[in-house]
Image 1 (cartoon, rainbow, N blue to C red):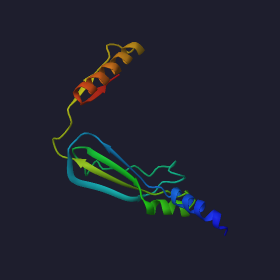
Image 2 (cartoon, rainbow, N blue to C red):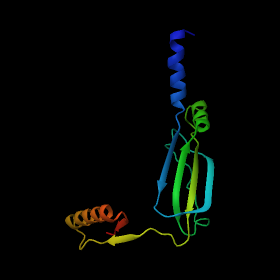
Image 3 (tube, rainbow, N blue to C red):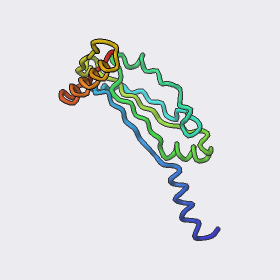
Image 4 (cartoon, rainbow, N blue to C red):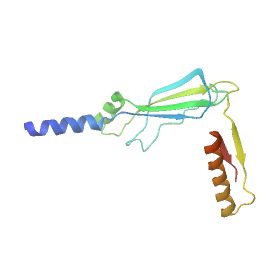
Length: 138
C-alpha cells in the first residue's frame, strides 16, 4: 500500500468508529436504582432504533436520567458490519420516591392559534424566571 494513503485511511477508520454519549435529565433526584441494557440492537446507522426499554416496573417514581452511549466497541462492531448493525448502550436511572420537580400548568383561554402562541410565550417566560418545568395543555 502506498505510504501516502496509510494516514488518511487510518484517520477514516478511527473517525468512522466515533464515540458519543448523550444524557437526558428530568430534573428529579436520582435513586440508586439503575436499569441498563448494553448492546441494544439498532440497525442501519441507527435509523432503525432499538426496542423501547420498559422500566415502569423498576422505576415506580419515574425516571431521573437516561443515558445513551455509542462506545468504541459498539463503533467497531458497526464498522465491521458496514453499519448494518449499530449497537448502543442504554442506562436509565430511576427517580427517588416523592422527588418530583416543581411544575406548573398553563392552559390557553381558547383553541385559537393566537391563544396557543400566547400560552407558549407565558410558559417560556415562567420557566426562564422560575427555573421550573412548565406544561402547556391544549
